[in-house]
Length: 164
Image (cartoon, rainbow, N blue to C red):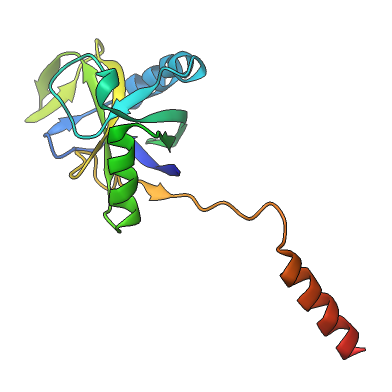
């Protein structure tokens, strides 16, 4: 199962009252490419307080991450782990799931807003019920069939003959 959608937004006040600059998110998306390439970009179901991803709680793996304007988009693969099977069941059951970044860094106040400072380091993306980024809900990607069903081919061929 593959999910995709907006994972994070720059210059947007999130539900935690924080704003990330475009430069910080661009840098962290670039840095995260190595983790993705090494197949280590895993995340958990729910959002723990820990700065370490617990392998026994992993539900998914980020397979691509990119920027479009101020938005960070991602594609994740749901894994066949216990937490991944729970995530899959939720999605199959019609539950809308969100995604939220987990990271380390400091914040500062500017004009009454909490700004994420330049020392921010992205750790992972977790699947959550309430994402802090507005609209960060993941959608299931549906794959096209690789080949037509033989019955469909025969039916179309038969209809073509009848039309002639």
